[in-house]
Length: 83
Image (cartoon, rainbow, N blue to C red; front, side, top):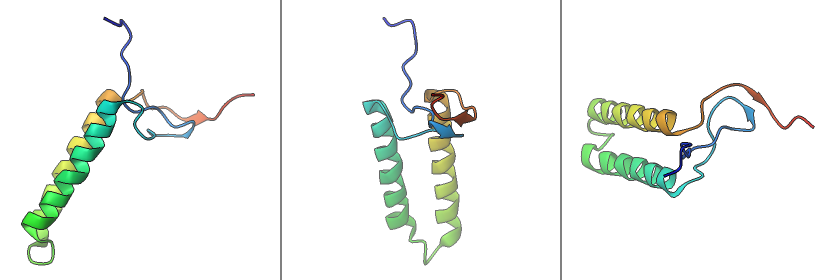
């Protein structure tokens, strides 16, 4: 097995944060997040019950951010390629 952990989300080249997924696992995480938001929108009907929808969206987003944080490159400020 590979001794170095492969990241699912690479760091951005400029600024702080993570970029689009670079592994299939990252794309699955994004797809599950988007599908979960769609299910929440259809099941909780934001126009009729905004409270539960906002709560569900907040929980799903916190889970998504946690997975990205745990499987992405360590965050730090980047100034781009130094050429």
